[in-house]
Length: 325
Image (tube, rainbow, N blue to C red):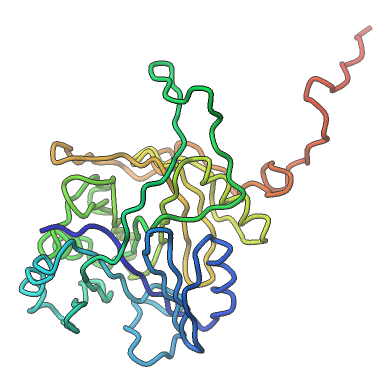
């Protein structure tokens, strides 16, 4: 039995209008809405729900809204769900509606599990030519006018007790530690074989519970850039990016999310197996990002925000410096 990944997340907010515009610009499809709830889907059916803060039955937040109120993880079969029913039945806040069950994790977050509703989705993605391998022949790499995220790939939380939160996800849900900031943070994946992390738990020097970001997987590096440039043209604010994480190898771009904290486009994370041995890192700017652009790239000029716009001439058209006397 293993968890497959994130099936659904729910935000709580007092501003549905901004969230509707943001997530549609982000590339999600609005599937339904009423006075208190917006329901979006990614390409493979992963759901993003944005609910009015005072909606009846909405799980309590781990911090004031806007923030993430609930994470639903998917499993493969009803047998897997039954096994988790036995594991989670004694945990605080246990609930069971038949098709979905869960509890409250040590950080106060509502954690739910269901048989996955996501769809298998074959997609054409960019091939990268390197010195050693040349898989892309007579074919240019794609360019994207905007992103259409495939799924919610991972979530990152600030936690009050790193050891307790890690033990919960390891012992109750079968997660595996991929890499560590000893005593500060744990990257965890759902199963021994999979992407570098589905969950990152981070304990600050003054511990608190909260959301850091939600990350959306896209096809390839070109879609990260296309999505980020589109969001810039729409007027949304970059927090950091584009850039590259050395620990997971992923290319990223973070935006400020009106429904809470940050959201990230990312691609090209490391794929791990049971043979992988977790590494220990010391926090620092070069560990977080091999390179990154603060403030993002302007979607119109295609230059760093506030940089001089392009002139429309070739760089070689610049006049030569006058001869020196």
